[in-house]
Image 1 (spheres, rainbow, N blue to C red):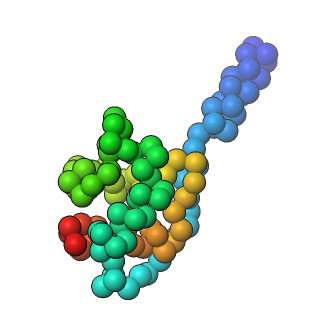
Image 2: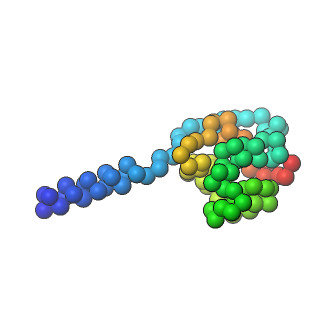
Image 3: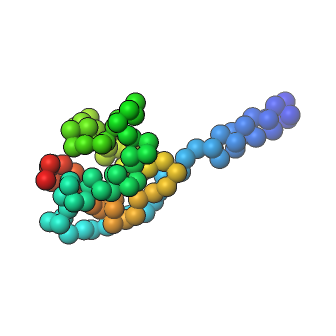
Length: 112
């Protein structure tokens, strides 16, 4: 029984170690008047997200406004970028970048 418990404990620790941790960086308070899709969000996503979310991505491409807006409308963008902060994989957005995304979403994710 003791051996089984040690094996179970080892497996549990291994699984915990393999989980992606989410960022705890706060979202910055940005000047939202300067945040636009074309000037802020698209360049940010192109530089940080497009390698995984290109035109043929099964997880949701974000190469243009319509594709990005679809992820906004179904809640996936806010969930993965701001709530769980599981995107982008393998890195994190800065507090300022998170603030920019929050501003854009709070404005209704306009195509501006």
